[in-house]
Length: 477
Image (cartoon, rainbow, N blue to C red; front, side, top):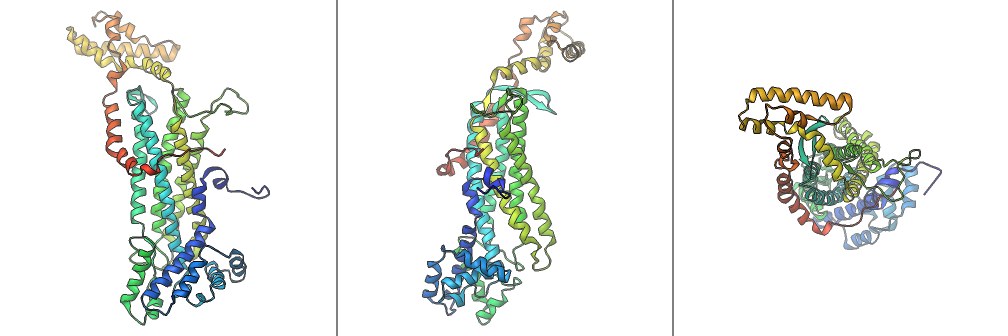
């Protein structure tokens, strides 16, 4: 680790080695060489004078990238692609005349970007599946545990701890669907030439348009993709970048929602994220258990959500068939958006593996509020005993206002039930009223909804990718 210059914290603190490698120079330039080989093989198959010996020579040096020669050449030419064509040619003197034949820089640059993004999407999919699996376990474990629901962060009808987790889970499910769609449908640029017309290849094949069309499809098939973009300028439309980062932004939104909820729940002392034995919460206040994992995830999620603006600007300002003001921006924003997303998914999985639920605190909070929620049931019981609904409704309203003022203005306990029991118009004893206060009677279909989500939507995905489930997630710092 260098200590005399800036180090990107996405690499040193947050992203996984797996994701960092996908955006490495080895993968990038190795993919360039794979693309040059694929182009040469397709051109040979379609009749151009390219030999097996030339292709074999290219394959021999595919992963032996002579970086020093390429970097030296780039300092002279200021052109990265031609510098690597030159360096590859030094290693492959027989193949040198046909490397990059008919292609433009975007052939290797853009196709590599799509290939790399697809690899990164597959890692994101794996991490989404693992997170959904872990959240499913938590949701099922606590599907029946009543807790206060909150609207506007004010106490509302009861839900369950598991049902609340299912809300987070469903958000990640929608993210998974979009990730899966992109993996299945993301197109390559293909072999399109300098302005997307394939004119250089038409010249190479002496005007044989059908061979040029086949060249495009053969390269795409050989690289394991289903299709290329139908039309392009020199580059693929930058709307593809926007689509991919929109999906990453969606994950950021889901992560921010989940970790914000956990931070609020930790304030209420109902649910806490993991806290290690020797972990320090504050440099000043030794007693603190700050939700640093959730805060870190929310912080990085905010970064991911805002990366999308760069891709929107780039897509909207490309001039005609191409301009180069996208290049430097894309080198930064696309890898970093993926690495931050990778990091926040790992953090969320780490959190969901060790969430601590304080059931007694949750129950205490329910019992502080449930008298208000039970008033409708109390009213119905009193009506059964011959009471007048309109009169009873008004008496409950008066008692509720008085009990609420006692709690908020005087800091005393909620005595609504005692007030109702002492009011002869209701004809109910305190014991009879308390029998109406079973929290499990106020959670509706929370447990059933949780099970239905997991059984119908999540479990089939987890089963499909069962071989990718598992492995430890450890925060680096």
